[in-house]
Image (cartoon, rainbow over all chains, first blue to last red; front, side, top):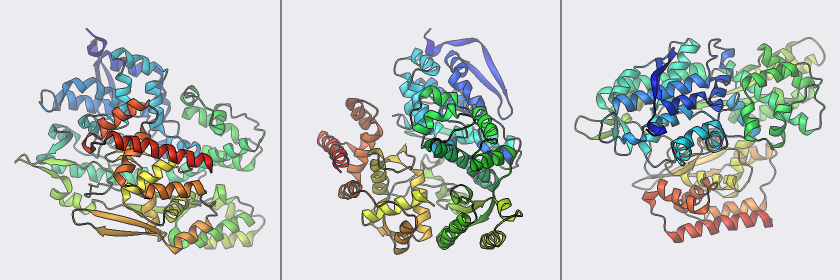
Length: 431
Length: 171
């Protein structure tokens, strides 16, 4: 028996709060889960700073990755099994891609990537193809297997059905994170009838379609997604924490560049500050390492680094107001000047931030589309785009919702001390 | 303040308007691959490299009135044209952005003169630039089989990239 088809002597199960059990029979999957690069995902939270708002949201990318794997396993082993339009030889590939799709995420992914201009997808590829334990395991399947897994995750793999299971508007990734994030945040949104959706998914030509009898379950899924984005993912307090986190990293980078003598040398960051970091240095970073630095930087001499670190560690976050930059960008300039006069550096303490989401979209002919549409399989065998059939989905199709906020440290402006009149002027502008 | 937004306004201003969302996506991607300082993240999509961040930025800039979007009905399809507005120009001045480098302006102009099909070809090859040339072409055919790119077109694409790179070095 080849390594690719080798089964464990006994099925292994992971107890999971969302799917009850995650089932593993394949030796390759079991070995990949044990690889150190995959185990690192235990130390990267799925929702970054959201735990500062929803205290239960401490779950990791490890548990999400297992969840995505389990959903795909159920699709290919149950729903698609024996169907002529599904190529069963792709089974192990799609399972590995599901398990490893988030492998390159760094600590506090979004903020970290933003400051150091990185892309987690590139790191996923580097980990899959580099000198790593995961690569060693995948190579045992076949020499080109790591590249195939990388291609599926990068959406450049030839079989589009395989890509769609991991990445489309109704994929295993979203189905897991909506339910998992709802469970751990404790919100009542994010729930939908996944069992129904899995039962009505069908492989057709180069895509995955949904039997029209499952349309209402899909409507529910899309509305769940919409609500989760605005109630959880874009929560303004969580964004405030992320703004501060981003500014800590910016400040540390700027100080390093200026030759500042850190009391606590930022050894783990040095390669990121000067752009010389290696893959192993990237893998050595996790959220525990970052939090340790933040706690130590609370005592740094630099008042900005110390203050921002204190704020993040102790959840003393920035206040925010709605801010329409289009109308008020002159006001923004005025605020920047007043902040400088008040001795508060606007680079770190006056931050404009936007959130935006498009709940569902479909291609318009001849133009660049961003989403692979959801297609329904009608009883006649005809394929119809979802929003043509569902009035609920049609109502939100292509409609982007955007939210702009301006973040600032209100406590700096209200505390007793010098420049009271100036600070009052700032507060009046921020009303 | 919104430096990345300002760079996009400047890019479209330097092109004196860009017609086609696909064209805009590919032009910014190619410039980014040539090490011009654009931070938008790209993923592979139906028409090659595509940035959700760029789409978002352009939409925001249109909402802010810094870019103007004109919808042109072409019968079987719709095309969008983007232009910098006076308010957009003022905004880039307020953002105190460095003037676009002459090499970048020339690069933008050369890309603008190419078809979006050609830019899709160039950007797809650049997406696979970590692979040896033969594998890049193999990959191009695997993901863009339906477009039937000819050997001549592919050779032109490589020459085009080489010219843009030389231009960057000379300037």
